[in-house]
Image 1: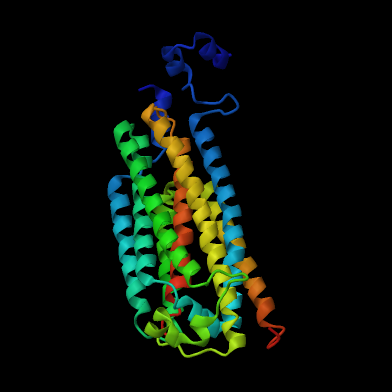
Image 2: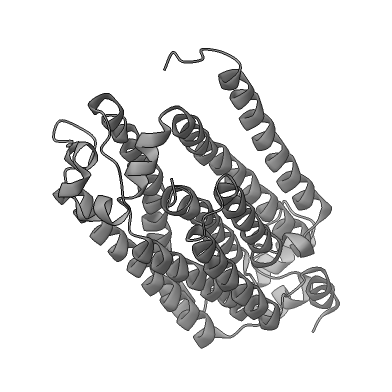
Amino acid sequence: MSDSTAIAHGAPEAAHDEHPAYLRHHFNSVEQQADTANFAMWLFLLTEVMFFGGLFTAYLIYRNWYYPAFVAGSHQLNIFWGSLNTLLLITSSFTMAMGVWCAETRRKSGLVLCLVLTFILGLGFLGIKTIEYSEKIEKHHVPGFHFSVQSFVNPASDKEATAAGDKPLPLDIARRTEVYFSLYFAMTGMHALHMIIGIAILGFMIFRARAGDYTTGHVTFVENFGLYWHFVDIIWIFLFPLLYLISRHQ
Amino acid sequence: MSEQQAHAAQEHHIVSPRVYVVIFLALLLGTTLTVVASYIEMGIFNPIIAIAIACAKAILVVLFFMHVKYSTKLTKLTVGAGIFTFITLISMTLADYISRAWGRW
């Protein structure tokens, strides 16, 4: 069997002639192996789409139900931080895409640089998210026992609410802002969790890339991680307008 | 380069950095547009435009950054089937919520 000879010799030359060392024996060819990995990654991403889709649908329905509360809640978010985070995330997607290109064209130092940049941009995103979250904690906008409707029943006492020109909400409607913030924290929190996992994997990849692991022609891992990272970017592309932007005027 | 490698290189389409740069600029433009649009009073069209721009950006990311434009038919079908299922599920859920329990929330 050709497969076993490649293993028996183990020499790079033999592997070169027979098949690359990274081709698993249950695949016919490198393309088939790559296509299979790609297909599986997309199936995983579809489960992720359904997972986030449930949160988006919940947001859509509750926004229609508790519209004035959602508008007032959304006015508490800072468009500057949101836009900056969008910029960071889109740039990190670009550096990741360039990383995939570097791996494909076997540029080791380029790949390491791209992965490090993606890593830093991802951390920057989380840093800004921390600033935003701490503001919510200070103002008691985190759902739970300490949640305060102060900013919504008495907008004059709140800088953001005053800036947005909010009218005072009756208490029963103001209480619904807690639903807005529950969804805000659930959605951005889940997104941030995906970022944290991604950043952890990036850290691992940077070490392996420095050892030259992804620039041998076997780019599946980098490519599939790229798919994951771009998916996380897409989630943010939808979260940003839905949470920050669309209620500016009401 | 062996025959097999040449074949593999032919199969595996490498997207050029130029495409990535163009898409990156398009995404930046989309982000700017969506922020600017949110400051303009358009009533019901504010959310519609915001979501339309988000969809356009997502499509660019999927097609180019995620290489779906250059992928196999299997991948294209998988992505398409996923989006179709997602839209079906959302529409059915919304149809349900829209058609009952009015004013009981």
